[in-house]
Image (cartoon, one colour):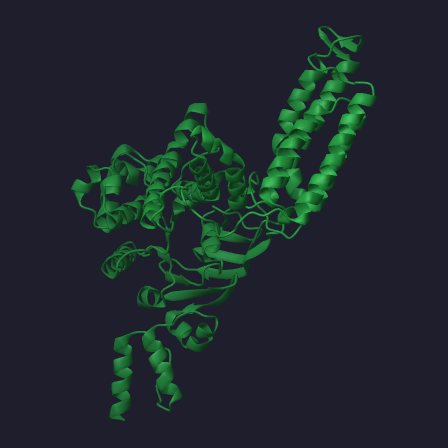
Length: 283
Length: 274
C-alpha cells in the first residue's frame, strides 16, 4: 500500500462564474514512504493548488486522496488530523510568525495537536536543531530575527509537528545562493535522518535534480510527467518545449549528443557528465 | 471564502457606463440616492426601480454579481422591513397582542425594502463599472473647490486610492495566513466565543505586521520617486465629458422630473415624518 495515493484529482476555481478555471486536471499518482519528490512547473501550473489538496486545505472538486489507504475527506471533521500528518510549509512562511518568542511560535503546531508540555519542549528543541537555530534565538521575538532565521524558524514550526509527509512550497524563494544551499542541505539531511517523505516545490530544476529521487512535472494543471529523476531528464527536450528550464549540464549533454557524440542525455550532475565524457575519450 | 467579496470591485468592460466620465457617474449616483428617498407613491417608486434595472442592464455586468451584492444585505432589508411593518399607525388590518399590521405599515415596509435594494444596486453599478483610479480621480476633481477651505483634497484622494488598491492584497494575504495557520492545526471553526476570539490572534498579528511593512515600503517607493503631494502634478489621463455623459444626464433628468411630477400630481402613499 502506498503512503499517499491520489486518484483522478481535479480542482476547478469559481465554478459557475466568469472566472471559472480548472487549476488541476485529473492527476493520479502514488507516493511511497521515504521518497523525496520534487515538484516543478510554471506559475499557474496548478502545483500550489495540488499540494494544498494533499493536506486538506482545499477540497478537491473531483477525485480522492488516500493517506495510509484512507480517504482523507471520509470524515471532514477529522481533517485537522490529516494536516498534522501532512505538514505544509507555505511560500514565504516567515509571514506566519506571530508569537512573543520563537520558541512559542514553533510550539504552536504541537500545542494544537494536544501534546503534553514536556513533549512539546522536546519537539521544539529537535525541530530547532534540524534547521540550525541556536538556543539563544529561541527566547527572542520572531520579529527580531534576520530574514533567513525567520524562514528557518517558520519551517521548524512545521517540522515540530513531526509529519509523515513534509511539503515545502518554494522554501528557498528570496534567499541568497548561500542561504539556499544551506537550507536545501538541511532539508535533505532532515529527510535522511527521519526517513520520512518530503515533497519540495521549486522552479529551479538545478536545485531539485540534486536532491529529489523522483520528479513531478506539472503543466497547465495536468501531470506532464512523474518519474525517477534520471528518467525525467531523458525527456529533457520535451520539458524544454513546455518552457521549463533543464539543468545547464543536461543542455550541454543534449547538445553534444546532437552533434554526433555518443553520450547519454539523462545526465543532470557535473560529475556524471565528466565521467561520461572521459569514458568516451578512452574508447 | 474571502474571494467571494465583490463589494467595491471593478469589472472591466466596454459598456456605455464604462465609457462615462467618473465625475458624471458620481454626480448622477448622488442624485439617484436623493431621488430614491424622494419617491412618495408607488408610481414614482416604480419609475425609480425600473430605471435602476435599466441602468443595471446597460452596465453589461453579470446579473449574478448584482444578485450577490444584494444577498450580502438581505438580512438588513428583511429586518428593517419587518420592523417597519409593525410600526405603522392607523387602522390595523391584522392584530395579535401588541403586534398589529396597518396599511401604512405595509407601505413603509415595501418602500424601505425597495429603497435599500435599489440603493445597493445603483451604488454597485458605480464601483463595478469604474476603476478605482478613475473613481478617486473623479472624487478629487469634484472636491477640488474644497481646497479653498484648506482641505487637502489631493491627499484624501490619494489615501482613498491606496486604501482601495490594498483591499484585494490584504484579503489575499489574510487567506494565505489563514491557510498557513490551519496547516499548523489552528482551529477557526469550533470552540466557544472566547476560543474563537483567541484563534484570531495568529491571523491578526501577521496581518498587521505585513500591513505596516507594506505601508513603509510604499512610502519609501513614493518618496524615491519624488512624490510630494498634489501641487503642480499633471495627469496622464485628463478627464473629459463625452456624448455619453450628456446623454445619461438627459435621460436621468427626464426620469427625475417624472418622479417629481408623480409626487406632486398623485396622492401620497406614505407620509414622511410618520
